Amino acid sequence: MSEGLSKGVRQSFTARPGSVAWMPPRLKPFQQLEGGALKLRPDHDFGEVSKPAPQAKKGENPLSFKIGTAVAIINPTNGVAVVSTTSHSRGGARNRADRQSDALTAAQICNLMAAQRHARQIGLPFTRMITIHWQAAGLRLEDMVKATGRFIDLMTKALARHGSKTAWLYVHENAAGNGHEKGGHVHLLAHIPADLVPVIKKLQMRWLRRITGRPYRSKVILSRPIGGRLGLEATNPELYLANAQQALAYLLKGANADAAAQFSLLRQKAGGRVLGKRVGTSQNIGAKARDACLEVGKDKF
Picture 1 (tube, rainbow, N blue to C red):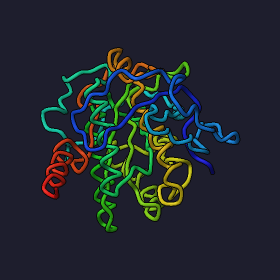
Picture 2: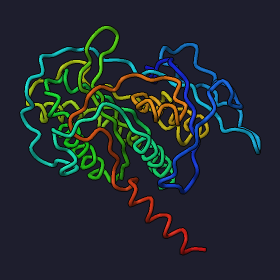
Picture 3: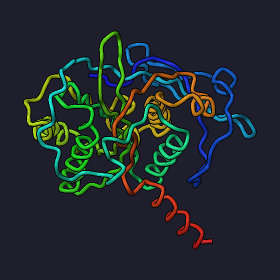
């Protein structure tokens, strides 16, 4: 069955290869950018890109991408406490439940964009978008960040057992949608090789039962290949890149007003209050890893 993201607003952003702390200037609105909208697949409800936009000529503004909206998984719950998220926690003090935030900052957006670029550069492009509705799984908001860390640990170790490395980033949200309260949930972009997707999909429901201590609830987790089909990054890199940027842009919709203006995000949607770490990346694509890569590059010249 075809998988992807739904139709929605447009956003554009530029990337300067090799930069780490670079903060982009205010960008022109989508309608003014060269290249126009991408062609979307008419037979799909989720707005996947079916044809990449023409490449911008030298001296012209960078391409823009039409941004879709992930399918909301509505399954309200009363928020029963998590049973088992005590081990393999991530982030130390930064995961404290008393650390609150209501939106993404410009610095966080820059970090996520740079992390996505670096993942491609080290051969671990994001191939899958995973959404987990922790409230629907029976967790309290204050337990969401720890549960996400546990899920990522289990996924990383499972891939390692099959000889695969991974890279990932995530954004936590806590927002209403379609007239229903979605509550706390996470959007995760990760590198999962096509041949290991069946393995991970078979294990993920077991992981959720292990993390929450409760039976799996239908549609708590949604996992889809970026671009709608497995292996797109190898068979059609240009189309994959358009869809990968579309997927990341969806995760950025909860930016604060200043960040939205700086990045010309034409769609904004409240990300809601999150307790603990709002965003994160794997160490191999984090700021330190990117800095180390730049230093190695300098030594070669």
